[in-house]
Image (tube, rainbow, N blue to C red):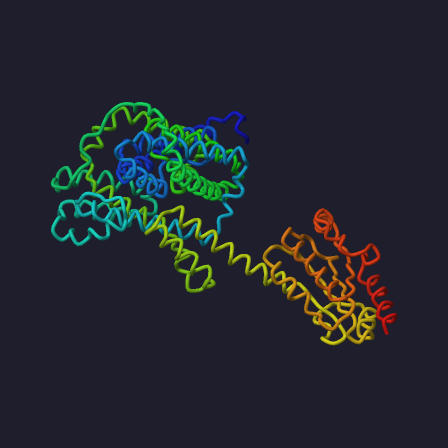
Length: 544
């Protein structure tokens, strides 16, 4: 069923129930994320409404529910800390991030963003989970939150003197419910909602000294006027880019989860456009930026949601609640939200990778740990950049080993080295008594193996006639093509005759476009190894 097909009554009912269930889960999380970002609980609600509605309507994942997430909240908290005196700039950064996401979608970059190596994704997601836990420890004990994880850890010794016991108790109640409220009860009443209600009631009637959210503005938000100045623009681009990339990765990973559950296929580029519109709208109303939310999406699907109607309806429910919600949210203890977020942070950590870290290759484990540490103690963009670069080097090394291993060699002195030859070809090479060397290149040749290409294929020192067989090469990139040209010229400079068995398709087109095949005469190019060997044998006999 596509978006234009009419819904049956049952479809509509399922979508509305899915949206209602997702809204119930989203409410406490949005409040908690807004507080954690330092811009107030209603900013989390406004973000959930804006991103949730527009990403559902314009996005490319039918059953996805979007809104504030842990990773986006952590980045926004850093932005708010930097622009605390001028929040219009902070929300302008959110709008810029949304515009970048729209640009990603229009440029059709969706399929490439999810190629981020799993070690890097695991590292920065786990790092974000750890950051959430670290910065929520102080509010859990009834103290003021510090947005920087290192500053929060350094402030832990003050807990012994500044903690509020009532806050600890309601925080523990909240955290305990998040941990144990599972199974069928968790389906009927989601853990975050139960933790919010029970923890707040405990604070209202039993543990009244726990610090609460306090005054919260009511009604619809005022629109934020975008603030841009040329001197500050370069500084604003970096956090906007982080929000855009992180939100895109987070959303598309959630889209893959939704596809797996619903047996559908999302449109990644359209999804980025929808997320970008949603985040631009969130910045415009002073809301928290968001992305596709895995937990809310799964809950929506399990409750029956199968179309964009469910995601949009979840946002409409939150909008309806906004008009009368604020007074109800004022008595919520901050420690209750801290307890909810500590469990959220714990769940964000990639425990599946962590449990396997002793069994994965050392290079992959190192990439994950470096990305994690940089995420926690430096910043996300540095962490992801370093992680991707490290992954590229490791991948290149592995590709090099495969490509170099695909070069086989046969001559009369060094043996046949796994080179599959016909009996006649074998006889001709052995009869040449070391004067002919035959190298077969297979698979693909890329930048990864270009540096080693000359060393491996140029090892035939004593041979006079060299046959380079490219007939089974599927792909040759620019670096490898240039290395092949240098190899041929070096052997020709050593007074050796080079014969080429030509590749086909794209590999041949690359060599022809770059002029590599012009380094040998037409009489030295052959369609098969057999034809090249016949000429090589004649040349050897002429030189005797």
